[in-house]
Image (cartoon, rainbow, N blue to C red):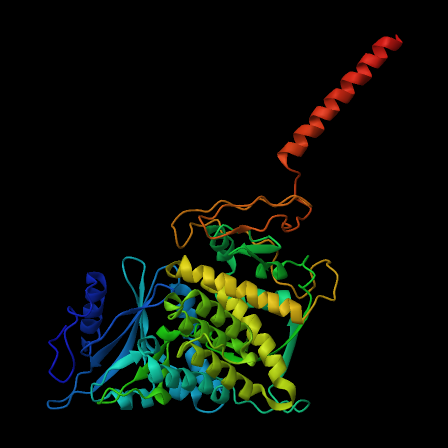
Length: 503
């Protein structure tokens, strides 16, 4: 790597302590004949998925006295997720062509160099900020993630992102019949399953719930001595709520919208410019997603920053406000966490307000919140406290949904629109979080209650909870088979004695 100039930035070593990563960046600079450095005060941010994101500067060869420098986002992907991310990054160009208006050009970062595989299985990706973003940071000002902002700066950036995603990225013409955004129809079970699969949580939920001491097939969960409906039961085709009709607004969604994937440029005075934000991590972009997916994801990821500092009453008030935003801010809930909930509801309902769209929006927003809360239980760095809080949030939200939308369809076979099967079987490959292969869950016997599982103070399966139903391959418990064999033996002996007496 060539020595950096005073205007360009700082060497890599003080800011990139990882020797493998630093060597790969230096090799990249030599191979493409570019000087690579980092801006002062660069911070390596590590996201929930294990990826690392930071800003670097590349200086291209140029005539003497002129040094064209460009800033790039460098993302380091863990080995287990790199293939999904690389496939998704190709979507950036397609989104730029398909998106209504200038949203993609103004806010979606774009991959500019082929990815680089590291010898430890990780992968480097280079993404270029948007032109508006670069104009703000050309003078060397700092780039900050939304996770680094607080107070009014956080609220302004939070609002700017949600308004742009909905009102700019999804500025579709109103549907003729309603005067508002177009709607789609599906069923409750497939809706939740789709959201869990899109978040990459579908195959991890059995393991996550077992860590908290719960059985994923239980009808209810006992959390803090309070029985709550198990949100996962609605995904079971045998659940009376599985086939409940769901209407939702659909369109473009980032799919992994959290503070680490929202970068905000700052001016020379350090003041953030939230209207010029850039979105990175485009691996899960979806053109047909429920529009509440991004809103719920960014809202929950942001409020989780404040959950550890909340008291018990404040924590319960936050759950109440998230589940019932239309009721207004609870008095016990402090700012700015209360403002985040209010802004998310205000921006979303303003987008969907025409001709009754608010009712549909809030209903689907609650379902997306359930899916995002369940997804957060699979994140290792949120356990145990925030992970259990997310599980309680999901259960409370499901309870509110069931109360407002009681089941009207009897339990039956899986509808044609259902995806996959239930119960989900854990993957046979080594677990991504623990490095071990989890045991498969044996199917439960019909009409036999699952025994409580102790959870080191976190809760147990509610007594008398019904397990998930089994298919044709389900087998009776071992104890039942032993009693049947003993009864058959006694019956055979009795018949033999009767025959001997008769002779």
